[in-house]
Image 1: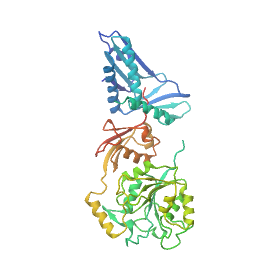
Image 2: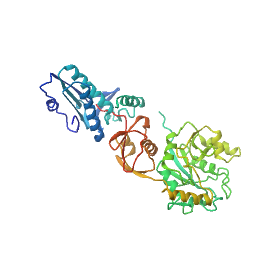
Image 3: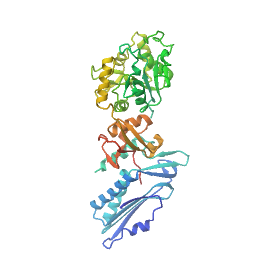
Image 4: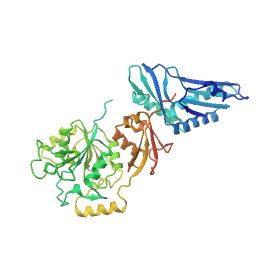
Length: 155
Length: 291
């Protein structure tokens, strides 16, 4: 599986080993971390909720698209589920390829598509005790925007 | 953003049923009285639901046991045996009891009315108008007894009645009402005479009445919190994901509109207008936020 969901923390070294290839001249990765603020509010922790059946299908499809669009060797994306604290690694993308350009491009493609298409939802718990689902309740315009993107990318 | 007023349900069962020569609320289709059927139908879309009745009817078995809103003796038109004020009296009594609610008002003699039709009306609702009503397929005029009446209509109804008219249809013709063409042309056919009753029983018997099916609905994230559950089995007559969401949107007062969502059927993203089959599993997908 080229897209994985997991409750446990992400072992980046082990994931990287899955991408090793004699024909690869390099590897690029992206790590998404839990930040302590969002849109001016102090964030204490996050909660990721997932529609697993469809998330795995859609995530796999995105990585397959990257392998088709870019001349790369291997690609993998791992996303966390459940409660995460500040500084934790929420999502990891890794790509190996003969040359660096494609590795960067494919890595960027995968993280952008995952954010817009995979049914994963993020609930922010703020330091003031309040909480909210990102893109769902604090700003209807943001939600519409997120979906415009999603629609653009649906194949 | 201001939320529109909540929608309560009102089944009008205060009529004298003079043409039918018997109590219309007690007519039976498929083993359930008209009143029970319409009450159950309305309860699947809005909450709470009341039955409007005359004071003299309060203890009749078909009405007793349901939450009643009785005609208000302070309002005109009710101090006689017959309900001279007609449906307007019932609607005004409902507004007197809950002035801040909008009312989805249904006559009890609509045996063909379906979940899909109510879902369509609720989805089309414009709370800035005085009412949202179906347009009759027979004469193009508003159908006041399958309509959503907004709180602002209460005062205008009082003026209308004071001017001497007891006809809610005349009121809607002149009022700022949104008229909706029913997708099901037969949905609002009503039954007033013994002949029409016999005909309706035959029709409903012949095609099995309003066929419903069971769907599995799973809720995630903000929809899970607002529905207060992560899944349910839904018995519904709605035949497309759009109609199912309209029904659930009204029931749970979801804050997300259909335009903000995607829908998955049986684990795949799907079109909103696909025809659903019994046992299909639906997930309404709120705006995502991975990464």
